[in-house]
Amino acid sequence: MSRLANKFAELKASGRKALIPFITAGDPYPEFTVPLLHEMVAAGADLIELGVPFSDPMADGPVIQRASERALSHHVGLRKVLSMAMEFRKTDQDTPLVLMGYLNPIEIMGYEDFANAVQRAEVDGVLTVDLPPEESESCVRMLRERGIDQIFLLAPNTNAERIQKMDAVGSGYLYYVSLKGVTGAGHLDTADVEEKLQLIRQNTALPVGVGFGVKDADTAKTIAAIADGVVVGSALISKIEANLDDPQRAKHEIITLLKSMRAAMDL
Image: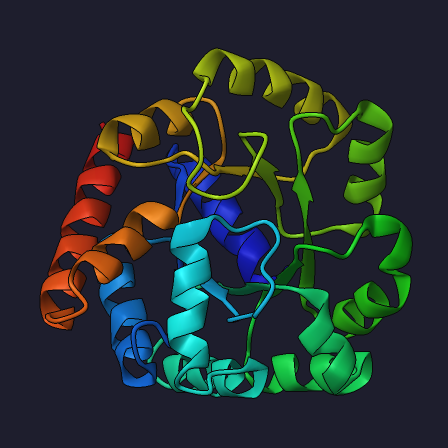
């Protein structure tokens, strides 16, 4: 059983839901990332999605786009992100780590070299935004051979047939994008999310994390009541952007927000 599967099994057994923070690696500077990962775990994160900076992040809103720009200005690319993951693993062998990014950097590295590098870094899962299940066979096979989960995104307009395709080739969990649009956009419609989750659960036994639109403890608690995991990204990265002249204050505000979400989800 993978580290991701183990984590979701542990959470289910204890009646808890996964708190899944997303940050962009290298934002606002490379040395900020690994200590923040450890502090997020201490604040209650169950697993972490680590964004790979990319110059054309089509699914990301302005907040995460600017985070990528800040990281890229420090020359943080895929190999550097993997080195951060290796550094994190030196003192944390328990918390699942998922790389989230786009296909272009992976194709430049090559699927096999990428899979080997992910395995060496002890990363547990890969979420490639622009890799549809129909074109994922080679990449999924190489990751699966190394015990690494491929995670897929579900959108509000994903139908039952497509959910079944993602269930067949995906593992670890599925990520439901709760809004039409990019990250950080719009208002979360809980009733709509709950209705869609019913369709998703009819077509997969994989855990389902919900993201896009989770901003505070109240929305985290609401989503935790209906999903297996709560993903928060833009709300955290906004703290970095608001405190570029004081990164330690940014870290403090991120940890405070995560602790409030954890507490609300566990009530």
